[in-house]
Length: 124
Image (cartoon, rainbow, N blue to C red; front, side):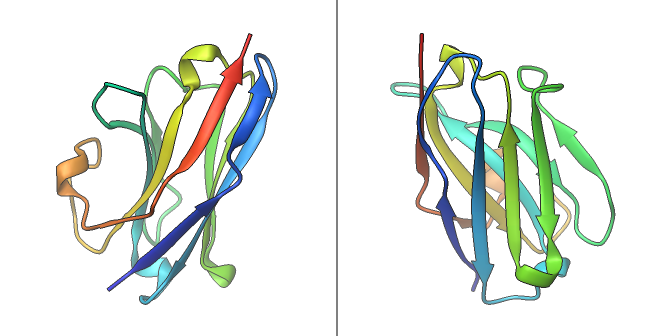
């Protein structure tokens, strides 16, 4: 089992920045693929960013590429999402996800473990 706890959400003005954190436990963090997803009210959960295990590979959705940065601290079992130049359409609950196996990382149904989510609200 993997336990994930997100933090760092909040209310920010458009153009501002936030950094989300996801603390992981239960498995060797370096062996986990990690991802961020988000879900806006009334909408499906969608892929935001991916960090591959053991390799410095990252991928982003087109809507956040160039503004968001995913990173991981394997020594401290923590995943981050630095969000810059936030827009109103970034408002959502953000979820951290983990998986030990190869997966189609953009598909939420393929991930085994999820955090409880943290709310990000961007005001104009």
